[in-house]
Length: 297
Image (cartoon, rainbow, N blue to C red; front, side, top):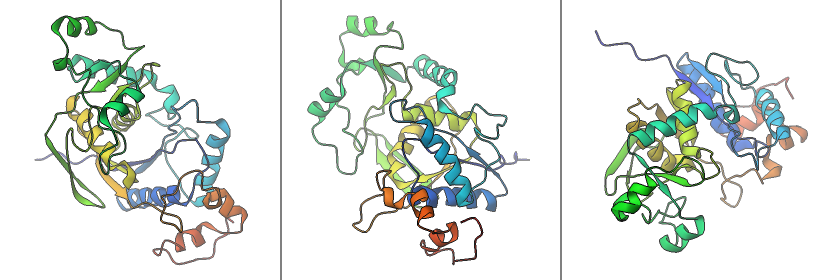
C-alpha cells in the first residue's frame, strides 16, 4: 500500500520592511483558502532576515493588519508551535546546517566578485530575469588547481558563496496557477548566492530551509518569485529533500499597470482601513468575493 500523502501545510511569509498592501492580502487570502479547502494547517513566518530594512513597528503592524483582514494561522510568532522559532532572525542554526550540507555535497563555491563586478561582466539582465546572470568568474572549473585548492579551505564568513547551477539543463515544474513552467540553467538565471560575506544566508537558502523544516507542503506566493522557485528546487535536489508544490498568484498592479510595492502607501491595508473600507469590500474588488456585511471595520 502506498503511503498516505502528508497533511496539507501552507504558510504566510511576509517581511516586515513596510506596511502590507492589497497585493499581499490577495496572495495571503489565496493561501488561507487553499489551506482551508485541503483541511490543512496555515503557518505564519516572519521573514525578518534583512536587519537593515526590517523594523519592529512593521512587524507589529503586520500582525495587526493580517488579523484585521481575517487571516488566521495555527502556528506563528504570536501563537508558537512545534516548528519554531517562527522569526527568521532566530533560525541561523538551521541555515548554517543547510550551508554545511551544501558545501559537503560540492554544490556551492566561494565567490569574490562584488555586485558591481557581476553587473559589469554580465551586462544588462536577461529578458525576464530578476538579476544579472552570473558570468561564472569564480567557478571552480575556471580556476587554476592551486587556487581551487586554496579556496576549498576558506571559512564560511567573509566571502560570498554561490550555488553551482547546471548550465544548459532544462528545468521545469507544474505550478498550481500557471501550469507547466520551464527555464534553462545558466540562461534565465545563473549561479546564485547561497551565503553572503556578512555571514548571513541568502533569501533562497533561508526560504528553502524554513519551508522544509516547517514541513510546508505547498508554497503560495506571488508570480514575481517564479525564478526563485527554480533556484530553490535546485537546493532541494542538492540536499536530496522532497520539495513542496508551488502556486504563484498573479500580481496586483496599480492603475498604471505597475506591480504594487510597499511604497504604494495609498493601497496599504491600514490606509484602506483608515479610509473606511472593510476586508470584505477589499476582497470584492478582486471580483471573486461579493461584498458582505462586516463588523471588523
